Amino acid sequence: MEGEPTRIMMGVNESTIKGYPHASISSRGAFEWTLQKIVRSNTSGFKLLFLHVQVTDEDGFDDMDSIYASPEDFKNLNHRDRAKGLHLLEHFVTRCHEIGISCEAWIKKGDPKEVICHEVKRVQPDFLVVGSRGLGPFQRVFVGTVSEFCAKHAECPVLTIKRRADETPQDPVDD
Amino acid sequence: MEGEPTRIMMGVNESTIKGYPHASISSRGAFEWTLQKIVRSNTSGFKLLFLHVQVTDEDGFDDMDSIYASPEDFKNLNHRDRAKGLHLLEHFVTRCHEIGISCEAWIKKGDPKEVICHEVKRVQPDFLVVGSRGLGPFQRVFVGTVSEFCAKHAECPVLTIKRRADETPQDPVDD
Image (cartoon, rainbow over all chains, first blue to last red; front, top):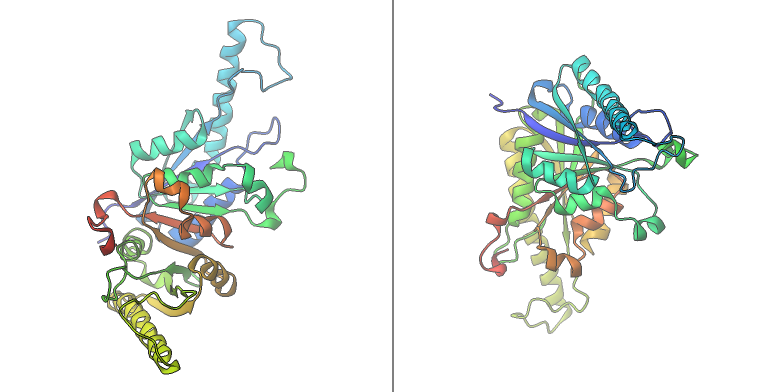
């Protein structure tokens, strides 16, 4: 007598370690926390919707090790971006299958905060989970984070999961 | 094999209808939403912790219909405030007993956003639920809401539940 499962949308992003496409610490933390504290043993009561937004770089030259000399090079780049995104989502989908919780995953391109809110409007999940790096009070003043924007603007309840201080990598490049 | 229940703290406040102490639309909405979308049929997996913060009015004269002429008058006022707060919490505790979900409820005085974050630190819930009136973009600029403050500063994940536009009362005094 549970009716339709609760549909949880999760915004997931990549770690910034160069050349190593896996989920960020905050994305993995938010996912595992949601399983442990919300889903618990009630796997049939929930469905997870993973959205990965790939940031579009306006000038297209964020990968400084590569040389782009022809339109074909850009096509390959798009191919590689897509492969990286799929690899990221594979982590979450695999975990869901292990646990026996149904899920969907997809990739969009654009400004993460705008795309997430747009996808909420389109997909209409019951709520949205966003991980946050948990910046200090000084950084907060200058950084309008994705999580803050979504908590204000997304047309559904928003669960913001800050990373604990002891989960912050020593080197920010490993974030 | 579920282990300890997930402890959900909920900040609940009063409707501003004068002389009618019941829970605000956003508090009741956030509570019912949490039961329906998070707890679902798994009542033994969760425990609800209701915190009601009574705003301390600095000059002590928010109730303009009354005359305070002696220390005794203030004592009665405190008594009445306390009765109103208990009446508010009774609504939530009664609902929990009906459903069979364990709960606790308590009252604190002070600035709601500060007190909620302080109580999170003390009680260490798994997450905090805060309802929000869902102010429009114009109002947002000037109003630092309790929900926004808590999403940033509370030392636990925070679920922000905005009221839907169609739940906004026509007369703001009924809010």
